[in-house]
Image (cartoon, rainbow, N blue to C red; front, side, top):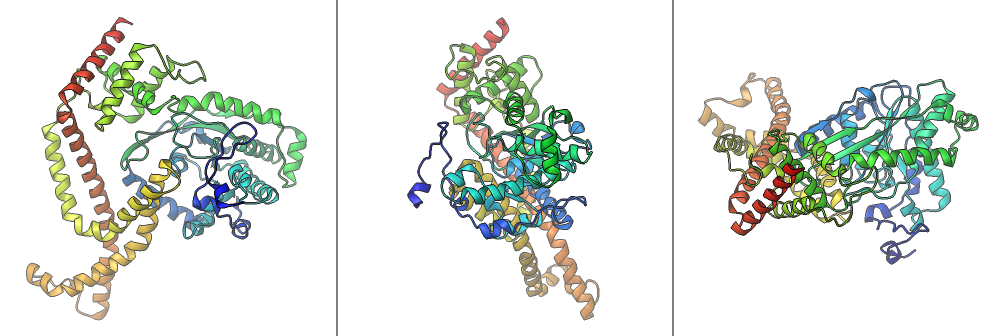
Length: 534
C-alpha cells in the first residue's frame, strides 16, 4: 500500500470513513509489539510497582499544573471488590484515560494504541507499566499489518485486559475507538464490551466478584487550552449478572483462550452503554450549540440568584437545559425554531469571539461583569512571586514549554492531541532537564560564590563546614533543594498565567464594541423574558 493510500479516506462496508492515520500510527513494529511485557496480577500493580508509582506520581504533579481545577463525582460505587471497565467518549488524547486513572480508586491494567508501546522513551515507560498494544481497524484496513497479526496482538492484549479486570483492577477503553473533535459521540465499537464480558467469564470461572461496566463523563471547559477546567464524572455502573455468561465461554477462558462472547450479549451491553454514556457528554450537534446550552444555564442561574461557581455545577446545569431539547438518546435538532435556544447560541458566539463565556455575565445577566480591583492586588502578588522565580523557571521549564508549544501546535493528530504533547513534554522533559538544570545551577553558584559572599556575607560552600566531605554534602543538599524550587517555579508560572487570562478577559469585556454589547444585551434580555414566562 502506498503513502497516498494511507493518506486517503477509506470507507468500510457500513459507510463509515476510517480516520487518517498519523505518522506515528502508520509505523507498526511487530517485533516490538510481540515483545511487549504481559501484566501480572499477583501484586498490587499489573506492571512494575516502582515505575507505576513513580509514573503516576509525576502524572499527578504535571496534571496539577496542566489543569486549573480538577474535580470528580462520587467514587464510592467504584470501590468494590470486582474490577471496573470505564468507558468514556474520547476527544482529548492521553488526557482522557489519564483523568480517569488519577481519579479512580483502583490500579489499572492499560490497553492503548499500538505505537504508544513502541515509541522512543514513552514506549520504554509504557512497557514498564505493562501497557497492552491494540491494533485498530484503521491500521488493519490501511495495510499496517496482516489480519492474522492483528488478531494475534489484539487477542493477547484483550485477554490480558480481561484477566486484569477479573482480578479486580480497573481498565479504560473508549468505545469510539479513536480520539476526535466533534461535540457528540461517534459510532461505537464493541471492543470494551467484548473485553468486560471476557473478564466476567474469567471472574465466574474463578469464583471472583463480577466486574462492572462504568459509563464515564470527561468534561473539559476548553480541552486544547492550558489551565482549563476538568471534571471526571463516573456514571451509574452497568451490572453484569453471572447468569448471563454462557458456560462454554467460561470453560474457554478457564483454559486461557480468547473466545468471542455471544453477539447478542455484546450488542445488549453496547446498546445499554449507548443509552447511558451520551448523557455524560456535551451531546450536541455543534460546539456552538453546546456553548448555547451553557450560556442558558448561566442566565438561568443568575435569575435564580444561584451562580455556577464550579465547572461541575455548570456541566450539570447545562445538561438540564439540553435535555429539554432532546429525547432520551437522540441529539438536539441541527436547526431549531426555538427562539430561546437560537438567542443563546448567538450570545455564545459573541462571547466566544472575545474569548469570554457565561461566567463573564454579571448578576444582571444582560450585562457583562466589571473587573474586581481586589483581584488586581492578588494578581500583583502572584506575578511578583513569578518574577522572583523566573530565572529558575527558565532554567528548569523553559525548554519543556517551548517543546510543548512546538509539538502541540504542529502535530498531525489533530486538536485533540495538542494538550497530550504539552503534557508529555512537561513530564518527560522534566525527567531529563531537571537533573541537568540542578547541576548547572550548582555550577553557576560555585562560579559566582565570591560575588554571593560579598553580597550576603555568607560563603554557601562552607555552610556545613570547610572539609571536602562537608562541602560535598552542601552541594548535594543544594541539588536536592533545587527540585522542589523548580516545582514551585512551575506553579508560579501557572498562577501567573491564570491571572493573565483573567486580566485579558476583563480587558475584553471592557473593550467589546458597543454594537456587540448592545446585541448581547438584547439577546440575553429576550432570554430572561422567555424564561420568566415559562
